[in-house]
Figure (cartoon, rainbow, N blue to C red):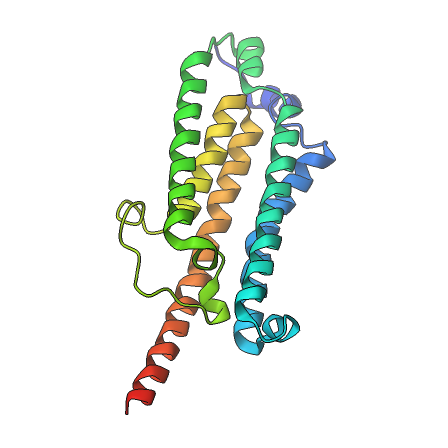
Length: 218
């Protein structure tokens, strides 16, 4: 069962095939998406450029932004699924080099559970928030009447991000790929970074909104 570090290094492409362009394209897309919606959202909040382009309709601008962001999510998922389909299975490496037989059925079942749970978090979050709430409507000046506290927001603070991470992790287990686990880890990392930027900025938006409303009352 013992395997040397030299064996792992020499046969690393049997664990993760880093030579495949689509693998790197998937990683770049994973990193790009939160950068896109954060930069675009902040630009709109500060300049209202997209609202003006859309005939001063902030709802129209937000819907177009939602469509673009959703489409980018689909292309990201397509690249990830396509890349993992061509990646080596970690079970093959463990079996060949370490003579380890992995419980494939158990691991894939756990992957299915993670996929289902992640899907529930994402879809229920979208249901609670609606289109504008899901796709940074507050950046466009579109605010919900009250803070959402029902499921899934009573389970975790950022169910969209948590659910999406669960989906990537579940697919990695389903495909039995180390590269899938790596991509899931990158998804988790970029979402954590996105939350660090989005949290304070969203709080600033709501503080400005509250200040304007208090000024109107006076």
